[in-house]
Image (cartoon, rainbow, N blue to C red):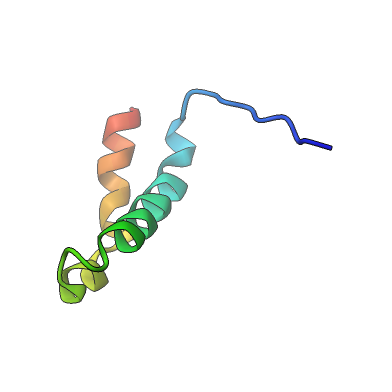
Length: 56
């Protein structure tokens, strides 16, 4: 049985989760394109304020 998917507008409380997914997707997608040192220093904690600003 398929689970229905709910698509909704992101809210401020989603910022931390979006930041974590953002960093994980960059690391997965760009691992062989961008140097590991750059990808490894990316931080969801550093990206969260930007997401909070975008969602505000």
